[in-house]
Image (tube, rainbow, N blue to C red; front, side, top):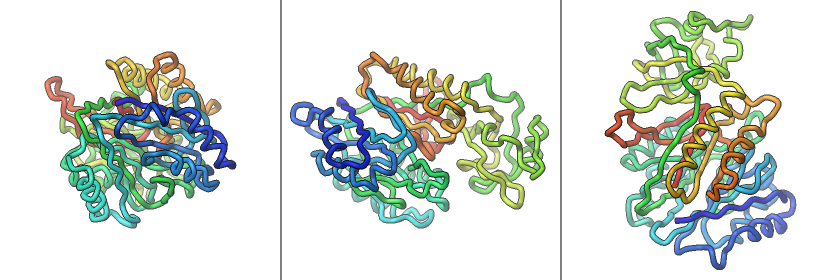
Length: 390
């Protein structure tokens, strides 16, 4: 398998955008037997018709989502469209998409998966996922449901996001059409060995105090060590404001250990319910052990450097796919492009095709911490840079 990348900056002129993309990809001589495209773009590319025109001009299926900012080798920016093409002889790609989703109901996901599986003809080695941002459906539901439906196929992907404060233009893209409420995915079939890397919060930015979750309901964290969650945060040194909220709460995500032998994941707190519960970026089950970390611009760049350098150092990668939480972007302050610039600097001269986009939620398998066990468990993440090396 190999990969090719391209980018476009012509938002309002669909013909010019197509010309930009086709001028960077060797359609005639560069494609192998099977190909698929992954696209990330500023939402205006959808409205202008550029996304539809680009997808219609390409001789393979294209899946992706809107984003805040993106990068491929050669180009990056906010108002940009980024494309990576995966192509191979011994690997195949099958695209699937659900019907509109309105609740946490497994049925549309199962129907879409089984339809794609019948067309693929064999169990995939990897799912690449593009999920809609819906306020009543959590990232954990998507991950856990597809984990059950697929019988554990590694699932890597993103939740759509955009440049608006309320994300009302966040959409997934499938073959030129955009949808606010559907889940699209690519089944990758073949003898591939994807490697997964995450970058979230380094040990030096994690509080030493540990707590045990004593009450929770899904992504609503109620109490830690028997103490209401916001009172617990005060006991470890964080301060409440006059409204009873922890000051800068988004900068203090939880590092959650499920105590099942897998790598811990990060869960950001987004809001406080009237009952005083913390609304987190993913489920936190009772019995999990958690610590609190700090996330600022320096930490974002530090963890990006460590994760991307590890990915680029792997032997003969065909390409690197990356999604970073929009929460990490908001932590960058006055230099909002600095994470992308850091990644570009690390990848420069390596001749490895890569694709980066910001995300409203990250799906990435985590490994068992037992040295002899290389198995993975699918997880939903917050405030994390997730990487898939193919």
